[in-house]
Length: 269
Image (tube, rainbow, N blue to C red; front, side):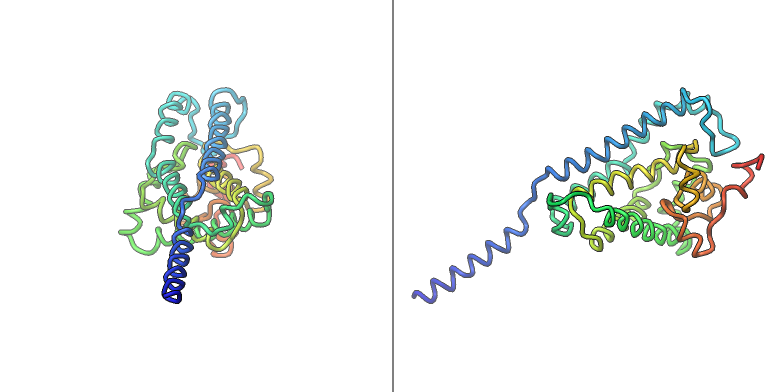
């Protein structure tokens, strides 16, 4: 009897350990991460508001840019940007689902240590590489895939900052969520590094759609980091500049087009 009891007790212990792995984690890290993303997006909106209404000499990316149109439509475009389901709603759902169901590696739930800049850079580089591959696939695998996924975003020939997340649910899933999920399984960082990466990643994807050049663009261009003019080339020419954060992959693949060579961007150069 004692042996049977011990055997049953061991089974209960193993079952308890097994179920304990699936306990919901504390939502504090999730809340802080989403708050960090939203705070940086709020700062971007303020920055863009200043460029649209007050900056004396922000350099527009496109020759046909009309500041009065951006001023007239600013609040309408902002509402659309915030309410797009393929933007913050889908990304927020992804963050909640992967966090609360412990799909992220265990290190992501750790508050020990500070921000690891090396892991942060690894995340940026790997995510952009995977995103570039998905972007190429959407364009070249089949016309049907392109129509279902990326074509709705390409209606913006000369995009504005608030067009960044205006596309389709399929496009967001393939080109943003899939690279994010794969990167998380490869680069095992703590929660603080994850927060920094997520905030910067969302900010970068927003800023490269800006109708204005940024003051840091000359520095970025030296290292082939993505700028609004680089990304506008893709929207105007379709078959160039598939990368977002880095132009390295396009240079390796032979798909990079320098914005200086595109007349509608730099007519006087």
